[in-house]
Image: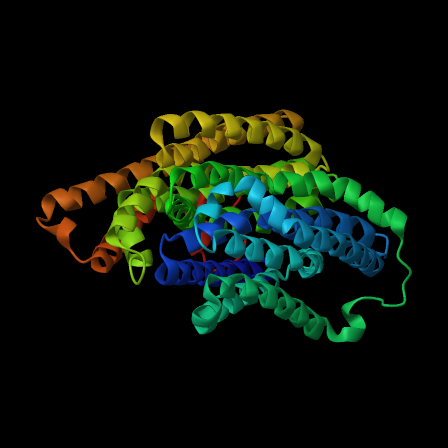
Length: 508
């Protein structure tokens, strides 16, 4: 088995662990605080600094990887790493201090309704301040995670992120009685420190970076000239989520929380398959571009799209069919009631399109970043933010909270269509026949799976009344078997590759 295939499998497994731990964090929050105003205040407040977190965490990795390859090719990889780490530290330190000082005014400006609750402003302000205070560690962590991705050590990068989530869960469970919901952002702050210490230990303090090296401000400036449009583009999704939260906060207690729970649940397949496949494809297409091999570059993107569709499409379709059971199984306990399950389910089914189209966009984005044309993505992203504001205003007026979830999917569809068509023109087109042939196989496989799920409920009386977990297990596993059986009948190359014992990719 090839080293790349082993790294990919380890990365996929570690991503599963990360998303499983993230799901546990969300269900802990739901179980302890439900859809109360405390949960609303925390979830709404953290979306603002979290836009900066994603700007750094994901954007930095996407910008640093091709930059590192370029400097490493001339023997300056470690020197470049040191420059970007030091430069990022000072930049994020300044943003952290400014964010902490402005947290109170920001919360009062964007969420005036929290003043209706006794501790609403206090919870939201403390949450925002703690997340802003974490940015300094997040920035340095992000550079090293980009470095580990460049070295194809994907699993360690994800493991360090998992440590942040686990620390958040630990603090929520141990200190919620003493600190209330503030225990969660405190745990996140501590987790970012732990994640940074893991990287120091892994590389040893001496090798962590060249402490004596003088900071090359020009090199850092050149890097950030490339990075900031990439980071801003990556943060578009979080900015749009923040816009959604602004509108949701005006719709009453519990709306922000239930929309968030729905989004987080539906986002799991996107994070597992969309982000994972895009991340694995990134070094391949980056190296192809660096070697001036456009055919391999386009083939890497095409396979990235198709691998994504093979796994993501049936999972989202199955989630749509079993959404009520899934929401109830994940969240319904403690402070999270049956009525909250119904509301969250109604939002989650409308978020399905958002997860699907943003996953495709994640692969498209890697193509632009490799070509160092992230400014295209930035322009389209800024347009999507304006579109999202208008769409939220219109749909929330007519459909309330459901309109906000529907708006997210519509905006994602348009964003995905514009970015894909732009990249298509930029690279001179893809192998359309190859893409359509494989996509048709996937669509037929999903159609047969959905027909089976519907037929199962018709042919097995009372199956809809089974216990949620039993129903999820039986229909989930059997549905997946039906789907992959159909794909094998079509001799789909991606399913065959996945099942093959060797690591050699199939030829086209």
